[in-house]
Amino acid sequence: MTTPTTTPSPTAAVPVPPAATRPPRRPRVSPAAPARTKGPRLAAGLALVVVGVAFLVPLAWILLASLNPSATVSVSVPEEPTLQNYRDVLTPELTFRPLLNSLVVSGATAVIVVLVATLSAYPLSRYRMRFNRAFLHTILFGSCLPITAVMVPVYALFVTLGLLDSVPGTVLFLSATALPMAVWMTKNFMDSVPVSLEEAAWVDGASSMQALWRVVVPLMRPGMAVVFIFVFTQAWGNFFVPFVLLLDPAKQPAAVSIYTFFGTNGAVAYGQLAAFSVLYSLPVLVLYLVVQRLGGGSFALAGSVKG
Picture (cartoon, rainbow, N blue to C red):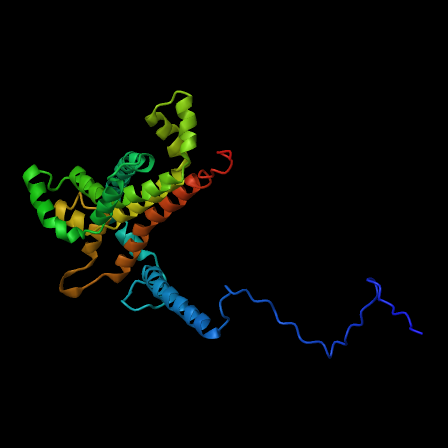
């Protein structure tokens, strides 16, 4: 007689081996996950510390030396901090007039460059032409030319045209040198604005220029703010061009007047130099904060185009 075999039901409990006899589970590691080694992480941390110290030490020297009446080239905490260095440099000849000249030169340069770069980047971004790529590469090459290589012919040209010691002439030259990179940056920002928004404006009867100023420009204000700050800071810290093209000390910006703190026979007024450097950096910092506050949040294109 054969005994019937019983098949276990699907719901029958399967015996689970004890935890001591179970094989340990290995954590799932993605093939793309980097290897967790301490050596590269430690080296990267040390490199960041070195870079941070390289930036913080000059900044600490400027802040401490501006409060030190007997400042030297070394970093030291002043025994009796004082604001005498700031009182010495806060004069119309040393600070106020040079800073005003810097504001005029840098502000006019930035406004001209942003305006011309916007008008130049629009056809490069919206129209497909055969020479677009070659033109952009030429622009990029123009931004790589060192300023010292062109100053001799530029100086001769300014003498011939009677633009030497002219603030408008210096502004035009600074605008021309900053324009290639500004056009490249503005074109990249303009590419991110959907063309369909302009097409909707064209359907409503707007011209190309009206669509540019009323649709494209408001949407790329943060990008234009980046270009403005880039050009402004570049012109603000330019020493060589105003030093060569502006001869009258009353017209020279602060980047050139800072040279007056270096006396003859190697004598340097370190305390006054540090105080002037702090005052010299404040307008750029304030401009960055103001432009960031005004331009932030206006580049949100989410929901402007339906899929």
